[in-house]
Image 1 (cartoon, rainbow, N blue to C red):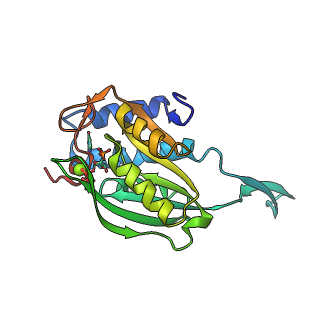
Image 2 (image 1 turned 60 degrees about the vertical axis):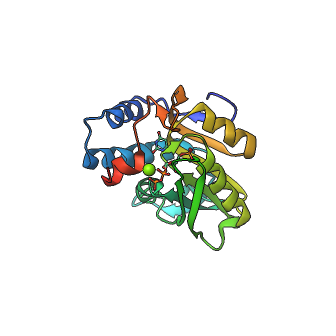
Length: 211
Ligand SMILES: O=P(O)(O)OC[C@H]1O[C@H](OP(=O)(O)OP(=O)(O)O)[C@H](O)[C@@H]1O
Ligand SMILES: O=c1cc[nH]c(=O)[nH]1
Ligand SMILES: [Mg+2]
């Protein structure tokens, strides 16, 4: 734990995979696969507090009471494009989750997020929401996405990212202090173009090969 609301997943597998993602020599296919693997490992931590309730069932040997997921249902929401690789991977762990999409790109001049799509589960107010975006840089995109979720009625939101900058964390803590952040690492700073330093480059471009 760094601040009260930020969890850095320091597991060696996560840290190793993130370092390979950072490597400029890592190609699109491997980068995308690693992003998916890291996302599942982040979800393992982000979902640590899911509720369990005992259920009676029969094993082939004997009946008994065993813990099963209970409580609020889940929603995974991707900030497009790059968050999509994360929800696609995590939904394999929690197949009953509904998946929402928020289309948003960062204007390269103003660094402000531009909305272009919003499709969320109709019952999002009743679900625990895990919002995904690999990069939390200035925090503008994630903060706007969280606001869209709140406007749609979401009550419980966790933000999952692969890499965060202190500036982005500060914006989320300022705008949405109740939102927990789960990340694989916090890098020292942003550059003058709003890129995380040392970072891993442009996540969307590295996932989809668009540069
Ligand atoms: O914290 P911020 O300063 O808002 O920056 C982070 C955003 O920038 C990237 O998306 P981008 O705008 O490149 O869109 P893309 O995913 O479609 O490539 C990234 O995936 C985040 O959504
Ligand atoms: O470093 C950064 C910052 C924003 N978006 C990215 O994809 N990478
Ligand atoms: Mg991008």
